[in-house]
Structures are given as C-alpha cells and as structure tokens.
Image 1 (spheres, rainbow, N blue to C red):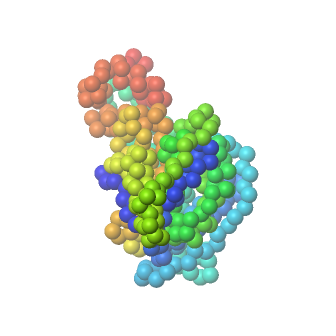
Image 2 (cartoon, helix red, strand yellow):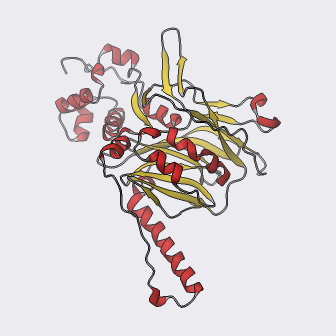
Image 3 (cartoon, one colour):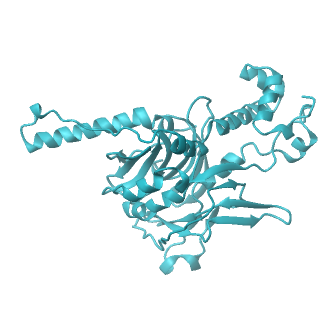
Length: 377
C-alpha cells in the first residue's frame, strides 16, 4: 500500500463556474523525456469480439500515446488530433476488455520517432476494478453454487457518464484560462473531487485539456452536477493594506496567500485522494517510467478513487487520471475484499465484519452477486 505523491506540482488559483471548480496543477520544471498525445476514435464506442459467443462494448472516445526517450533527451509529442465528436451516447456499460495496453508499432511512430505505447485513459483502472477477485471462491464451500466455483464472478459492468453530461463541466473547460506551466487539473463538482488529471508537459496539457469533457465520470458526479447546488462559493484572497508599503511587500503577501491556499486545498479538498493508501499494480515498463493502476482499500463512509499513473524512477507522478467510485461500488469492493481475505468462507467473513451470516448473504445479493450463493443460504 502506498500514497499518491504529487511532489513537483503546486496548485494555482481555482476557477468556479456554477457547481464546477477547477484547480490547476502547475509544474516548476516540466518533464521533457516523456510526452503524451491523443488518438481520436471514430464514433466513441468500441465493440470487440472476445470469442465466438462473447464480445465487450465500451465508450472509448480517445486513446493516449506515450512517447519517451531512453537517454533523457527531450521527446516530441506527435499527432495531436482535434475534432467535435458529438457522440450520442450519454452513458455506456463498461465491460471487461482483453487488452488495454498496446505497444505502438514502429510504422505508426510519427516521423520515424521512438516507438510509443498506446493505452486507453482510465480503462486500465476500470479493468482492475471490474476484475476484482474475478475468480470467485478459491475453496468449494457448501454455500456457493457450482456456477460460482466453476466460472467465478460473471462478467461485470458498471455505469459511467461522459463529461459532457456533467452539468457545467463543458462550459467550465471552454471558458477557464490555462495557466502558464499548467500540467494538470483537479475537477470538483459541488466541491466533491470528481477527477485528477496530470500530464508531463504544459504543451501536452494544452492539447489534452479539451479531452476532459469526453472522459468518464462516476454516477455520483453526474448526480451532484444535476441535483446539487447551482453554484459553489469562490475563494477570495484579502491582503491587509496596513502592512503593504512597497511592491516587494505586496509580492511577498501575495506569495504567502498562495502558499496558504495550497495548504488549505490539500487539507480541505484533496485529502480524500492524497491521504489514502492504495494498492498499486505495475502494468508496463517504459524506460525509466512505469505505467501502473491503483485501487483504494475500499474503506466505507469515505470517498474512494481508482486510477492509473505513470511514475518515474523516484516515484514522482508524470501522468495521473482518477475516477471516483460511488458508495455502492465501494461497498462491492469492500465485501469482495473481505471474502477474499477469509478464503470466501461466509462464517469467518461475517465474524470478521461483525455481522451474521444471514446479513452477509443479504449484502452479497443486494450488491448484485446473488448468482454466487445457493438459494437456501
């Protein structure tokens, strides 16, 4: 278990549009030997056949391609594409894909440049969540059905919403300015953290900023945008003129207020993401960088995020994208984790959770896993 480390990034002044608050993340020194660009897919919905009888369907508006150099020299970002993709799909089921990371062939590397890595934003993290303990019971306890032991969990699907369906997000991304040195953003809806997005270089962020409106957001964020407050309070900074006698005093006071805002942002708004411990799994090695996905401990009554990231050799984040789980998704993960920790024995799991076996069986059915249990349980 480890925490997210956003060293090298600082927060800029927040901007508010209705219930949406965007907090820019700035880098003092951009990462130059790793660059990201966007690949746009026609239609935004992909259906891929897994075998003769099985296929998966997912909303995939775009992919990212990472280019890096092995000797630390600057890498160029190639092939950025823009366009107005008016996908009619408001929300789409996310089914388990087979392959979410693909080495870019040399023939596709623009201009004969270095070989890149193509991956689907956030689908790595969603893949890790959907496949959580996918194998089902590891021991044939009498409470479990033959289907549960033979097939494990049936293929699962979760509902996610396109950013354009979150009220106010599209307008906020279109209107708000991009700051010099900005390499990321924290997106809040009704002052609940919806997503964090970080890239290596300011030029990458400028190219990828419009993609946020096409990204996936959780059901909770859609509800907050639709039914939550129409606006959130803006943070204003006041400087006492009594202690300002020169431009240098004014500059020092402004810098002090900016530091105070950064500390307040971490403590009051981003703590549920940055103070949590995550289980991290490496997916791909890219020279001195690592592409990983992470999931939380599924602690109840707390905001929980899944996500993916690229880190350098010192563990510093070069790329980050997160997805906030709904309360029901957290409860699913919690129950599956507890079952797996106690070898899927209902009695021991219920005792560890401080509840009866009947209550545990009720929760399993309520969370959508009724096919795992025998009818008499």
